[in-house]
Image 1 (cartoon, rainbow, N blue to C red):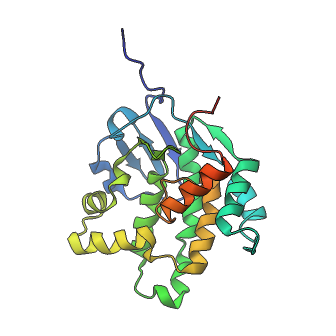
Image 2 (cartoon, rainbow, N blue to C red; image 1 turned 90 degrees about the vertical axis):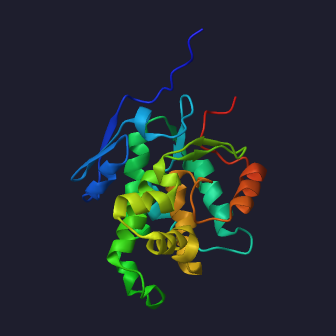
Length: 231
């Protein structure tokens, strides 16, 4: 009996809002040509699920209705975000849609205006570019509600990939990895990041959350998740 072939497109291309670093071409399965990023799933993903489905919320809706919401005693920001995803989330099997949404989310979270914050005085424009591009591609990674890692691309292995793509030494890769996994986010930026990630389904694969707390909240609330629709 023949194995079922994963239902990814043979290749897909996305126009990003600004040119991507061309040295992403060093990795198998990804081609960068200016603002165009093309992914060949057969070569790009280290692990793939069959018929992957992601959860997305329209970014304009997130900016209009969620980013300005204040946390309350009755509803923590994580709970507000989960409820927002439950109300407005839409499943998609199109990885190109995921990258388009991620491009907008991370241009917001890692914008150049952030460098005006005094506590980010040691963060550079290059750091922001690395964070922005790596997080955008990491949006294709999927973790099921059960905790199973379903889809993995090179951006999952952030320090090693950053060294290859951006020619960082070990110390430089570790420094940016620390930023990526939380060092960039004071409490204000953490709260904003949680709400912004509603656009990407508030995925467990994102680096900016307390993983165990999010898993518990999602299990309790029954929030929509990446993965095939539940029967």
